[in-house]
Image: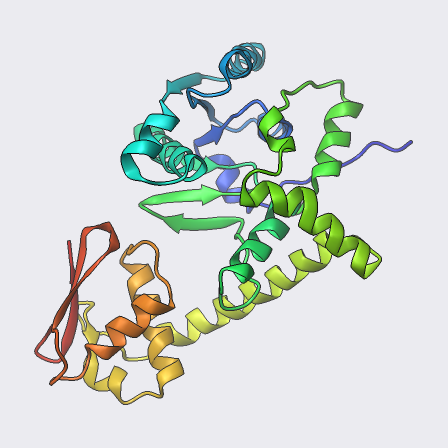
Length: 312
């Protein structure tokens, strides 16, 4: 049997800079760490212990610590109490843990002047597309291999590799990993998509739908990139980077919404959705009330003298 090849879908430039790797101990992040180590990248592994799953989570931390020692990769470990964070914030346990992980990864990236590498793969991409479509997203939008958000560069080098390919790649090389028992329980949305919806959809279509959904996500990403280039060429902002309302208001509604959405995302406003874009659009006319609106992330949108200003 020929050896399985897993390629990193990442511009070579990013392999020459420091990278912080999110290391859970699962097959995906373990494969990512080995693949990046083979490229002789300057790596730091960060493991987050969520304060759940008891001895199993302790075993994950021990495994990650030993793996990094074996590969001579600097290792950082952070412990949090995810249930307490969820209770305090009102978020689900899954969301609270994810937000805490992202915050820890961002701090590590700033300390090391590094990009952040996450182990999302092709199956994760398909789950993300279905998840966003089910929530009313505009088109089959997935994750990009490289994104800039929240002041950091986020890398997802495994988006072209399926879970089965990663499993086979590790197995052929005798490399071990840890299995999270909670991933096999369809108790949260992501697990149900992976364990129930995608297999059912593949059976209904008579073929594996993961690569098909991923192709749709890639085409959508290319369309959005083309739209972004086109929007960047429009005179929608003044020299100070404020939204210039006489131009924006002269455009048809679909184009106005695209301009507003891009403007909000460029300035780092989180959780941008259609409701937020429509709300901002409604306050742009000079006689509209109110002339200011609070946005997530501590932002304030203010209409002043034919301009829209975002302040924090």
